[in-house]
Image (cartoon, rainbow, N blue to C red; front, side):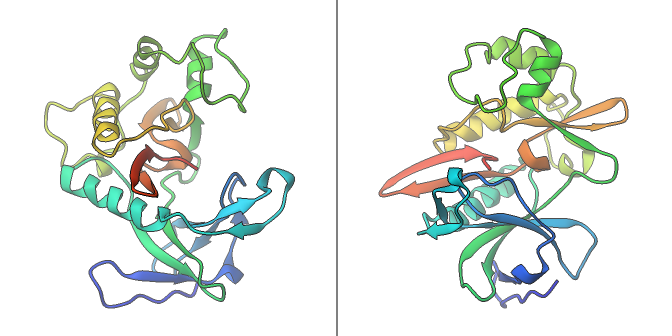
Length: 230
């Protein structure tokens, strides 16, 4: 995978779309997986663009909304607060000049990502099973979430090295994310932007798409935040 880095505290990495290994799930933005030259882990490039007619399968991008730099800022807040997260870097797509961000996938080998709504359904067979339903789910309550988190372990130790000794459970970590929500004005909390990594008989709490990574976006002068949106 070809990429270049600038000699700055926060380098902008050039990503060659010719080496894309698979498109991510198409929602409102274009994304794809690739491998960097400096390791075996796969990385996700997310373009800072909104796709016109994405639901109809069109791929014409329209404008950027600042999600590239805002996601990077949010991840650096996690660094300062010792909140578990994955590495996030600024990026630009070779050939198009479209800005974006890259983040490392932490789901490896035989691990499986299980989204929050699926975990809730495992706990309660009556929980809504429609994967298209994200908002306004009455069953997605504080009590139900905490009961589900009680069956999970906190994120893997590699992401928890700097956590206070009192933070020992998945519930503790989740509550930390809700405090981060308040700090960056998150308004996009739903049951598909938290998850677990299943490995054998163990399940580790994480955020959606296999990484622990917040973001917040700019709309005019208003700052909104949301963790791990797709």
